[in-house]
Length: 423
Ligand code: FE2
Image (tube, rainbow, N blue to C red):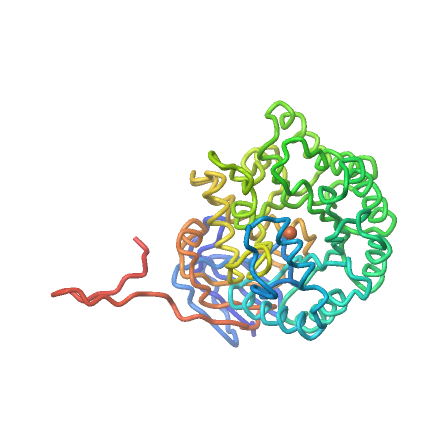
């Protein structure tokens, strides 16, 4: 007997009328019109069944701290970093854990079951690291939390940061992070990239660096990250996050840079909600959008994900763990309105981030984990358009969240009715 049988589902690749059979937490068969006894059978009624959403870039240590101790008045990245510096001395392990656990509940309700979160290692007590490692243990039954050791105040700029980062890795943090554009000079930024890539190579770690998160057209750390990846044989293991300076770079230089990134097998995470609000703040008009060159990177064969980055923290006052919101914003900012491009935006919050996180058994094939979400939409484009309701969310085949279908009841003169915004 199967544990779960889903019938009449539409899949993100365009197949319709599909059945998905689940046993012992894994998908065992995907085929049209399956019939078999199951503990639970769900008729998807032609709606979209997707592998769960994946967020490739988040900051869980600061999430849901909005307004503490004050709000970001200028709205800039640098004031956000300063504000986080004011909040840090007041943090307790319990405070960080409670906010993080609350966010993980939001994530599950939104069908977001894997998150790569950076965790600030600048504080020698590693309080946030300890808190998020405990959160990772607690949420493991329902959410994959991958942690990145992130030297927020600069690896070379902040005394003891390299030692803190090494200790965080020893405690169980998974991935090596960095922030080269925040070092004192371009040369020190490059030096930090070299040190961090060598450390990751030594320890067999993945790398995910905040890189060139600025409007500076002359920032050059992506180039160094690609070059170090190549030199150390780390192809496919390194992600550059943000890369917003690429928006402002000279086109000729970018025509050299993107092939270097592709050659190094660099992954990219753009964070559209944050990039569009934090970048271009020093511009009058025209104001730059500040998101990296997503369609051009995709065209070069580079894996690009859209991350959420922040929810209600010193850098961003909004958000609700909805990766479809990130996809929706990314689609607009990058002007990816063609049919194929809109589907790529869906991949940017599902399969692409799963690849960057090296998630095992992710997907909608036999043998994959049954981490699934049923949406109130018929296809990925409709899901993005409506930021569709997550009707049901399963983790390893077990139902972990449900939301009632969304619809409005009309009370118009002479013709009552109902709309759910689908044509
Ligand atoms: Fe970030």
